[in-house]
Length: 359
Image 1 (cartoon, rainbow, N blue to C red):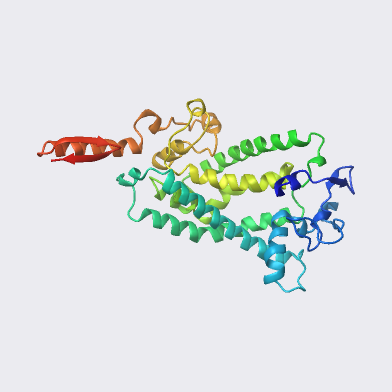
Image 2 (image 1 turned 180 degrees about the vertical axis):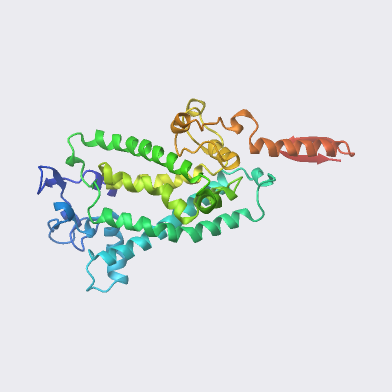
């Protein structure tokens, strides 16, 4: 069985309170391999009383920290005398893992998008800045560590049991159906809050201080996806982190959604305006977000067009109407082609926005 399946289907043990079923995570015993199962005799989960009378698992039961501690931090980094559930150790580990994970996601998926999806003709647009790609990368790399500090504080609260994250499907009467419903709930909940946070960041009292650095990129590339002022980036990510404090969410699902959210953020900056015709009225994709960068007051949504329509800020993307930035670049290339034709060039033809000349 896969790691994700093991965690999704972890058997439930009787709860110590309120009749709920809590996950039996004994197979992640102390120093037991989190990928291969228990090393030695199973250890019963260690429950401790938390604030407000709530019980929570030690950090060694958390998926990411278990793997990181088992394979890296306990054998190679931290002294053996430093317990894995020490709050300061957890904070340091989360800070390292969060920053490293964010950089890997950013460079891997943004690079793939830049070379295989992004249309480089957009770099000929007059509003594309000099050395823009390197500036986007530098801005992102400088901002991420600062964004991660408040993010890690929320992760630490989750690890120490203050959220409603859970491990076993058996904890709830509707099981897999509730898990699937939580994914849809997460998407619509976060889309709603991001819309209003994003729109608020465009208010004149905060725009210049926080959000304007992201709008420097009028014709963004995938590398602009994380090029925010640190506080701006954290505020727009906040809905993802507060969701599991309000609604139950499986830990593996939460981790998967966190990764997908980062990929989606890259994708809406990739300049690829192709959307299935059936989904065009509903999905807030790259075409919508490119117009947001260029026109400022439209298409604040993250995934869907719903709240832009409710809030009166929806605008049909210019690229869908043949007037987008890529259309502009191709039109300029065609005009250049025609002007060259009047200066002694013959049998020229326009191919993908570029002039192929035969004297």
